[in-house]
Every structure is written in C-alpha cells, then in structure tokens.
Image 1: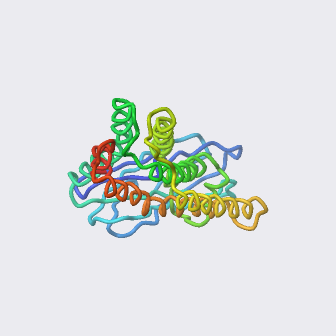
Image 2: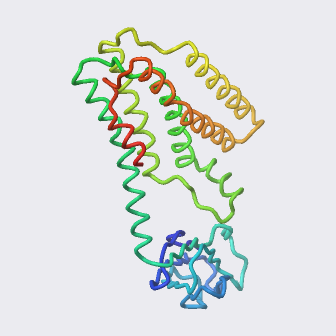
Image 3: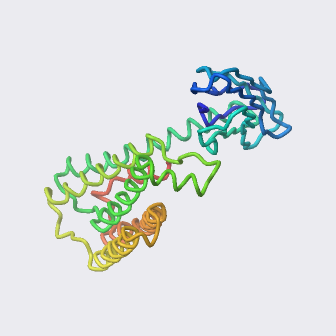
Length: 287
C-alpha cells in the first residue's frame, strides 16, 4: 500500500487530491476497509474505502479544509488477514493556506532566491575574467565559502541519495518527509562548481600578492579537524551518519556568519571595491 503524493498544499477554497495505491496479494479472501484519522476541520472523500480480494487498485481521495494550518492525514486499516507491509509511512502532510495567492507568492519567492543565489558567482567570475585580475577579491572569503559549500553539498547529496540515512531521518521524524529535493542537490553542487571557478581564476589571473591569511588557514584547519574527528566517530559507529551530516550543516552555518568579514576588511584597507562584483552580494541579499 502506498500514498502519492505525500505532501499536499492547498487553500481554504481549493480541493486537493492524492492517490491511495493498493497492490495485489496472494490471498484472494483478503478484505480491507480503510477509514481516515483526521482532524474535524478536514473533509475527506471518500470517507471509507473497501476492497475485496487484494486486486491492484488505485483510489483517488479528495481533501479540503475549513481552517488554515498544517495537518497529518493517516489511514486506519481494518484487515481480514495480517498485512505484510509496514504502514508506518502511510500518511499525507497537508498544508492549508488562507488564500490561494499566498501559495503562488511563496512558490515564486522560492524560485527567485534560488535563481539569485545560483547566478551570483557568475558576475564575479565575469568581472575577474574581464579584468584578467583578481585584485580586490578576498581569497579568505573564497576559501571559507568553498568549505561551507562543500559541507552543504555533502549534506544534501547524502541525505537525498542514501536510503540508510533517510531511514534514520524517518525514525526520528515519523511524520516527516525528506527535506532535500532534487533542486537542493542541484543548487548545492552548482555552488561548489561556481566557487571552484572563482578559485581557479585566483591561480590564473594577477592577484597583486593576495593570499589566504594565516588566521583563515588555521580556521579552515580547525574545520577539517572537526569534520575528520566526527567522521571517524561515525565510521566506528559511535554516532549516526545523520548526526554527522548535522555537524556539516553547523560548519556551513558558521562559515556563512563570518565569510564576508575578510572581504569587508579588504575593502576598508584598500578604500576601494574595484575588482569586487557588488552584483554578487546584491543577489545574495535579494535571495
């Protein structure tokens, strides 16, 4: 038995729908009756489903709500014989907005920040390419950024692709869905690629003696040591891989908090922003 999709978004004036897929079994006398565990503000149709014999069947279920909020819809299964499937993941997450336009605005904002953050690096890459110089761009910023982006990409790729880690996430969040979607993976990997392009330009173009500072080298070494220690603990099964991914997310968060400081300090010292693509930061702020 399976439900598709498991996440629905609707408004008070709209009706949403999902599919309940019942797959066949060898026992032709296996009868199922399915009702729904829902809050009173949720209207669901049909309110009861009966199947005779375990034939492959798809049922379309319509849902509406009289109150905005987030809700969990779970089937209550009455079976004439034991079920082989684990039905712990049979549920629907329903999000209800007060007005339909709010859903559209939220979706547009989501795509807008993704676009802003995705194209930002190209403005800096074009500025450096046009000048054939990276003078004015802080290497400290770039290397802190690549550390954070690598951690972020690893978090997204592993949680999205690893069934083992995903299963642990579901054990901790019984009515949760995987928070990482293909867009997240694509954006994170692209961010690493964009950062590598900028670092490659630092090696190819005139740098004016700009190097990574000792303080940032020590800081990055500290990050590497922290990641190595927790990775080792995970490998020897002293902590779970999901917790290790959370450690990577904390590294990413910490780099976000400090990575702009070296660039600000460089601009202050030079009394100039030449060589630094302000469009990149404006897009960051917009996102």
